[in-house]
Length: 569
Image (tube, rainbow, N blue to C red):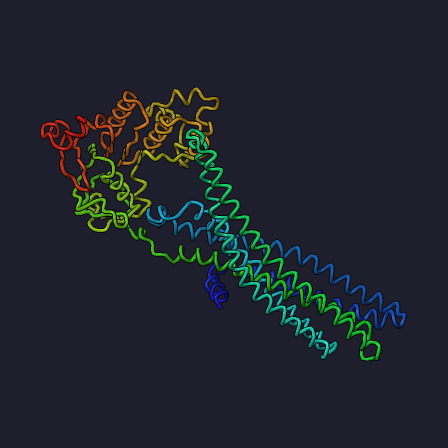
């Protein structure tokens, strides 16, 4: 019942592509005609052509069989091509919907989900579902038609012998039902173990250099060995369950064949049945077993797909905390207001009644000890999270009134957590923007103090920097990230510990250059080194989620309060 409900829910993903089902259905019908009629024509050859030494009828029936097989072969090729195309269309459609849902999730989704879980959903789970909606659902229909046709011919050939076939088939179905229950449990365990193994491999590959530096290679290999062992055990359990039940079914199938030959042979001897009909009956009985077994295997696939659909459904039907319901699309000037803002990660309170105003065109620094909520403020501004209470405004509009893309495209951030593409330096700067001149890229490279480095590379800015910029040093990554922000030229620029990997002299040079370049834009500086915020127009001091001091560097130093202690410590 749950499988039927799943298929009904998935029907909407076939909208607009149902014509493919019609085409494949026609081809499968032709294959059904060939499969069901061939044994009948062979029986006619045995009983009429061979028995009566009739060459003409032999040629006639043989020609029909040959033509049916040729046509069936062509339809099989076309149906496979169409079903593959259908599968890809469903996969793409489902992936896009899942991706759109993931994009709307808050940061909580990413902190509570491992990358291997998300990757498995997008690759394995969606492929399972698209397979069910394309090839498997059509195979079910094909097999059902075959079973009905075979039963008709069996009853027509010999009613009492067909009872034996029916009894054996029922036994096979009951055994398969038991097998499916065992396989569902085994496949779930196997799937969980492969997700764990993928996650450990991903962690190992991504952090290979760090593990080597800290002497953790052996430890990590031990984790891999443990996960590999768990996966092997789960896989062996799955295969063991499958092979055990398959062996039992093969034994029953053999017993069925012997029973038919024995009883059928007796009927031939007493003249109640012809040899041709016995041959056809035997072939039809075997052709009944094949689709029944196939349906049993599809039942296992449905069980596996149900697990996949359950995971996809949880994502698709989950409530998006960050909804994109805004209607405002305009150029931002840069006034930012945080009013009465409360925010916490689950039970941990981070911001409490935060009051903060950042004037357009100003350089506003936010400082404070680790864990005081500095980075959280920027994440809320980007709407990566939703505040528990209060409001954030840009240019007197609630940020939720802006279209999400419009909001984020007008804020640049250079973060301590740098993301870089496994691509060229050029593409890491322009990020897909078209019609960019070489002079523009050259200018931002110079402004970020990375032009000389890039010029000395064999391929210049066409050099591929590796996954997450592995071929660059920490400082070079930061300067490339700064070049990207300069190129974006957004009205609001956030520096979140952006220069922490640079030496003091380079850091000060870049900060001064950025302040000069963005002198008419809103700059938010979040810094650990307080020497970099001395020239800010306003410095807000954050402690335990509240602004406790605010003013220029000179004013705050005269107060000899918390900022003074941070600066002099």
